[in-house]
Image (cartoon, helix red, strand yellow):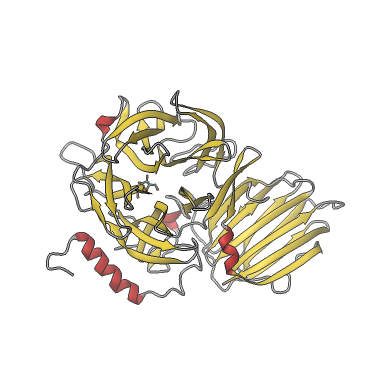
Length: 490
Ligand code: FRU
């Protein structure tokens, strides 16, 4: 280290010391965890110089949220991650209160541009303010612009907040312009998403407001993303303080608004609104475009309520979700685990048309590292209830209870080992299609991600269950034909 180490030098030194002490064994197999300390939102997710880069909201010095840095990891396949040195520390006047969430875009000259929220600490009589900052670098080291913050409250029309103004998601269009969406809390409309544009990344102008909550879908909208997919323009936001309505649960949610954006009119027309994920622990997702054109999404596999009560068993806290490919089917945003996961498949087991009634295991189908698809064929069956228990031992289990008559399932981790008074169940629509229901479970030690009917709905949840609870059982109230394809993961 140099004689006068900067705050970033000190974090990087701390990371080197910690890295030597930490074992990979304890970590999930393929879900990204922070090198050390605390992690929240995925940031700067991009394909750059032949690799995926994923940055994350990071507090290296404890397993609680604290002054925000950007952690960094790279991967060839979205599943095996290599840690890079911490990318940003809160060390300038424009971001002394934290380097909050943001995004990355490769520049035509080969450098990588990061756009993030700088938090300026409160002065006398003023609350802390938020504005957008720029840093440019080579994929490892980034230089912050001396003009930071490059997007200020003064850029916005009246009525928008200088206190809740964050999480820019940037891209570069074919016309050579940088564009970004950013969240802002409007006086009357609550959460809004604003579109801004710039030729050089330094000089930005306000284009339009893409959409607003108007208190229908929560208050402040965090971490927006905006992209074109299969003929739709998709806006994703993570609202705070949602009221339960339709398929949305109360609290921290994820919302996808599908519609059409007219660039000439500068207007977005809503067509439909749906939750992105129905689980207990999924928030602040971010997407990027893979070189082959797939739109890949990763979320923080947690939320601001559940993380408070979650056990801190490792020298790090929190995980990202599995990377998912998103696509539109029947007018809905759907998701499937990226196909790279097939590279982890080992010892595949297949059972076809097994009659299930009384609770039963299947030989070889057990463990906490698994990609398993269960399909029920309801033809000629009077089965109304089907129950799958996983992560099971004599005192624990996580349960998926399907009510086939109502077309609904309950994901229930109440018996998963937590003694905390937080949400443990979620009700989700799960309707058999042409007499079939399919459930794909991705299990990676302390999490389950459930993809219903090929990903039309997804339920993501951390489970605190001891790792030796490995049992899996199936039961139905009347005989039903079940097929199972189970891949152990390695
Ligand atoms: C979302 C969020 C963002 C913010 C970041 C701070 O989870 O609250 O709005 O930028 O986390 O860590």
